[in-house]
Length: 130
Image (tube, rainbow, N blue to C red; front, side):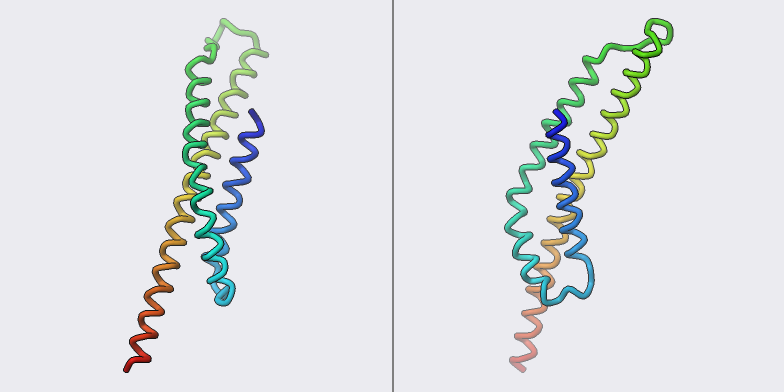
């Protein structure tokens, strides 16, 4: 089960790096190639959405079927194990949300950069016409 979280973490990190590279000023000559690469990667990265939903359902199922640890009914070891399980679930949920947010940001920023490039080319054509 840990491999799934590693894959999701690497995907979220890759999305974050791509968003960072798109938004850093001063990468003029590299930006066109970077946008082309990122636009080609957006469709494969869309598979993160159902993957995150699957992992969310896994967390929810584990939460619903987790044995409850009332105040006096469990030993300190069981109580510690219960708390660790809750912490891991919260960490994994944060990873799911961050992967989805980074994908949305990557899609939005890429769309805006492409739109800005198109508008700049239209302005240049109109300037050359006059």
